[in-house]
Length: 285
Image (cartoon, rainbow, N blue to C red):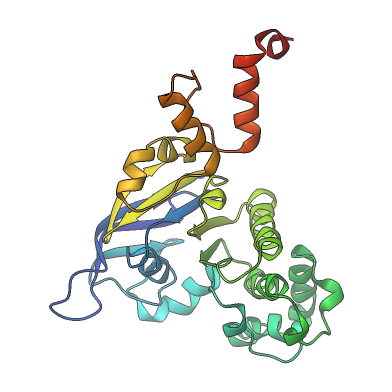
């Protein structure tokens, strides 16, 4: 099994201006191929800085960022890194560069100098992967926010990346748009093995990840599974972060004496554990 890190941060610090406090300070992170890693943190914590360092939009002030085996400090490798690690930004309108959907998906391929005969099937496959084929000839401005983000994802997929970095990619979307974008990314993670770095302030999205990093004041404060991270309810609150509603409810009931186990994240988890307590004979059958 291939276990070389896909993303490696080695004692990385980044400062926007001289004499300013570091936006990220001595961060060390290893992300393996195929992992779905959510990144949480309050505004100004350093999580977006982390995303931009991975995508080589910034170079570290100290330390090294290695993406797919390439050091982001090597200027001549920047395009190669961005081809392998595509980024989805918060505002879908800021990512649309063409007046026709399929031309927008082609944009990154044109920059890479991919021949036209190779581009066409890659565009078709990318739009198919995000279920946007029927909109190939549409004008992007006629699409919903969720559909625009799926076009942005298709543009990244056409470049055949190993990594997708999403920086608050669902923040400006309504609940249905958020769901369709997250479902698309999770499907690509599962079916194509694409590594995902998912920066979000929605706890229920983070609960679906394999692993969560919590960034506070420029430092990696916590690293663990969703159950491990969210079960530290008071610690999360101290960092000005929420936990999923069902985790908070289970914690409150536990304090009142209900013997609920740790690791409750979803409504389904909660119902299942409460049934075990209230109807032990039913849950045993």
